[in-house]
Image (cartoon, rainbow, N blue to C red; front, side, top):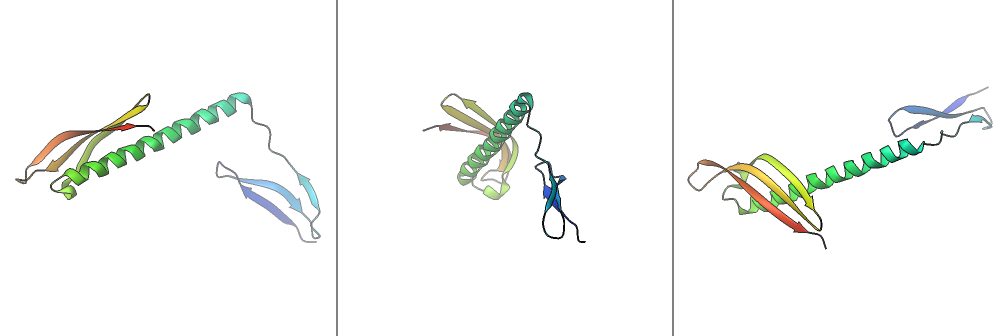
Amino acid sequence: MKFITQLALTTAGTVAMLGSITAVGAVLHSEKPAPESPAVAIARKAQQAADKEKRFAKAMIKRCESELKITLKDPSSYRKVSGSYLPWGNESSVTIAYSATNSFGGRIQDQHVCRYIKK
């Protein structure tokens, strides 16, 4: 008799056994996942929201960096020192501290601020 085990990859990256199947395909047992407790669901949703906000902030910083590089005399000399994203109601601002070379070849440090308004 031939036994086949069905396996699935869970969201945590571990392997979970879904059920065992015998030669003709009859399912011997199948387990449903335990329901999520309300506290775990709230914590999971809060973590997802925080992750989404972090990805959005990184994207806004990258966007501001792109806009900044266009204005530089030597865009290849650009080096980001720090970047911050600050949402403020209907607006948000990104501040980037950077260094780059000027027209004379000297390295300077400055800040650039991008402001965005949500439509």
